[in-house]
Image 1 (cartoon, one colour):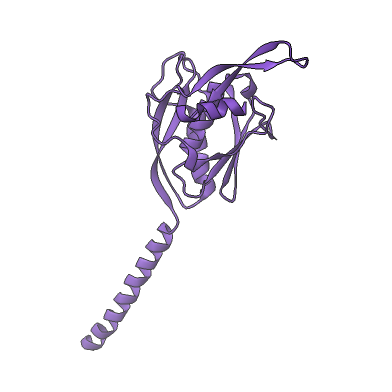
Image 2 (spheres, rainbow, N blue to C red):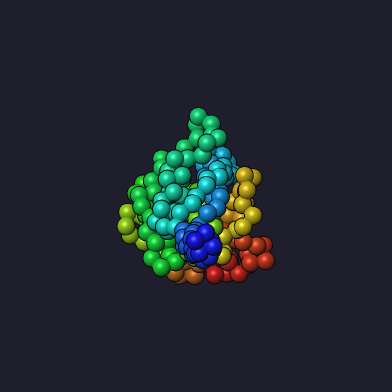
Length: 215
């Protein structure tokens, strides 16, 4: 009888082991367990810099992962001075985020259009960078109160592609690639020139001539 029980217990133990292994694999399959760095631009400084905060995320659900980042963005950084304003909550006010395939839609409900160009870019960059470690987010689209944002030239703002985000952002990053340029245009009768100042974002000095010509 003892020998029969031993024979039965071996395959039973194997079955239980494989069942446990399968259950553990199923629980971890597709999960995103990682540390995410959240980027907060400090708009109070002459040169926009980013304050960072690391959060731990662990979930199988994409909505929960996205919500955890949004909550961290709205909460603000841990290390900040008394005068600091969290732009994601105090200024542009992130109302909601929606994922459509691999496009993340971020809707603002605050005063986005009241910001300077450099501040707008810093806010968009910080948000996109904060979501960039999720493999299921490939681009970000920004809305203002449910409608597409219009840029400084009257055009619909392009989606931010995650692969195009500057990857070396740190606490000392500043938007030095944004500057004001004076452009001169001829009047309708061709007799006079008038000056128009425009802020341009130039990724490299080699593209400056091309950007000015396009303007």
